[in-house]
Length: 162
Image (cartoon, rainbow, N blue to C red; front, side, top):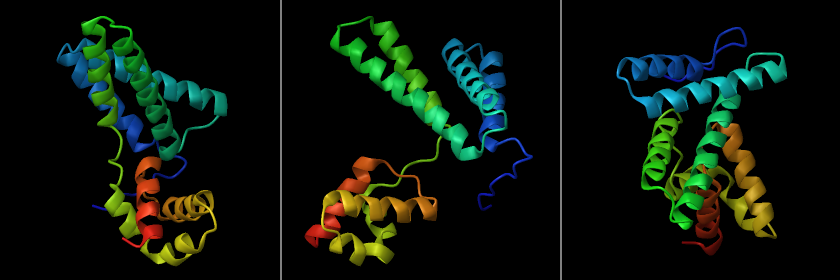
């Protein structure tokens, strides 16, 4: 079944998925999943209140990505400080739960394939930054989920001719 973007009057699919998983976490008595899913739902609802409208699916995903990034940064600090092992394992579990809500990002090879229609423009760009702009514009309009590191690697491959 192809992905269908909800209309602005429908709740984003992500919010429904979070609510479903939150209920399952409560029934399974999983405190880590329960806490992080409740936090994610609360952050999305706060963002909706600030915007005075329901968030689009991509906006809700951005909130979840921000939580993942925050947990990854905290995990790096906990690890560097020789922190509590339990806290580190809880953070890893939270990242796992949140990441499972997000679509998987394309690999560098898949990004290079997706950039085939604009490969000439990427190669012709005067700087890496301009090449990145061309690539990101194309990838965004195609709806691809990418990480900047994978795009940078794909651009290097395209520009070097390999």
